[in-house]
Image 1: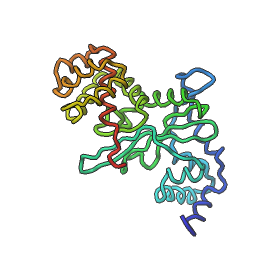
Image 2: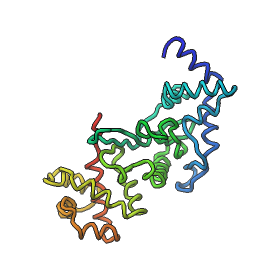
Image 3: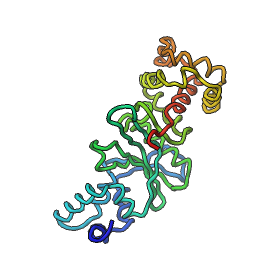
Image 4: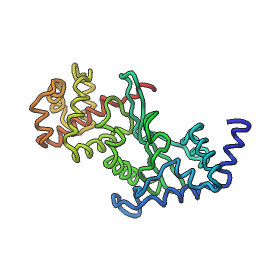
Length: 275
């Protein structure tokens, strides 16, 4: 931004502090008992988003609020939030569709302010939440890996269907493979019917039609399953074996087999086609 645009931007938020924005976010969060003290994880008890946090710290009349609202529509909520707070945003789980006429990407993202990390959802372009970027959880201290993991898994378990995350999505998803496998397994434990989504995605995967030694080794190593068990599963998945599907839906597969199938799913979808 240059010239008058830069001046306009500074005028909107020049009196706002990062502490005020943090307070606006944290007022909507409550502790979530999913991690051992002294670390903490938080979930929202009311709607809170990057947009509402930015607008919530502004003073002024309705016209000023409307101008700031219009600024966010034109210049972008995420871009403005990063500039105002001085924080960088990074991907946690990033999903894409590339085969349809209308492609798109969406996912979970993270940022840090003060001593907390926060997760928010960035939907595909043109959807209702695109203009808001809802905040879905937080953790502290920000550099506590166990607290971050617990927060991501808790948010994922609550939001994977609404956010169209694996196993709900159809094509590609990138992120930390181990974290993604654990998140998908939790989702499937809670909703076994979602195994149909897993089998549907794997059915046409080229990796299964002629599985390589490398694919078998990678899936076995990632899941902790025996390579022989992985080799036995692959043709059943490729053929959409009715017996396998029936056992999945009624919880008849072993933990080893379930881990192998989820590892296979993550192996297949872990690509960013627009990278």
